[in-house]
Structure formats: structure tokens, C-alpha cells
Image 1 (cartoon, rainbow, N blue to C red):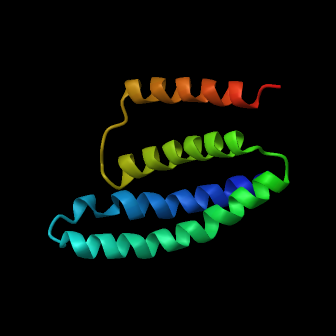
Image 2: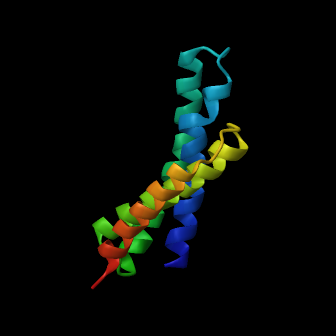
Length: 110
């Protein structure tokens, strides 16, 4: 489980930069941003696919893998938005995340 989560975290760091890292670089042509993002996304895939395989082989089902990945995505993005994009983290975002954590609870409840 730890291997799966670690790979998911790393893959989400790459994907967050691929999708949102260019937002502050508005002077770069869009086609260049797309090509750079594809290059970054390649490394995300190199981590995401093994993460999902390892998780599935270690007892996660598809739904659990996806929900776990989404929570990790939100946490990684929140850190990215605050520290890279310099956006304030508001209480409404925290409340939204808590509701999503509730969804995780129900997804893993037996």
C-alpha cells in the first residue's frame, strides 16, 4: 500500500506541473506549453501505471485506486496552488476536502 501511495504522490506532482505549471508563463506560446506538458506527462504515466498495478495486486479495487488518486491529487494541488501559484487557501476549500474524505471513508468501508 505504501508503494502505491508513494508512486501516486510522485505521479501527481508531475501531472500537476504538466497541467498547471504553465499558468504563470503566459508569454510562452500555447503549442510549446502543450508539448512541454506532454513531455512532463510521460513521466507521470511512468509512475501512475505501476502505482495502479501495484495497488491492484495488493488488494485495492479499481474504485479504491481512483478515489485514493483523487484525494492525493487534491492535496498535491493544494500545496502547489499555495506555494507555486501563490493563491490563498480558503476555509471553503478545506470543507470541500473534508467532504471528499468522507467519500473515501465510504469507499473503503467494508
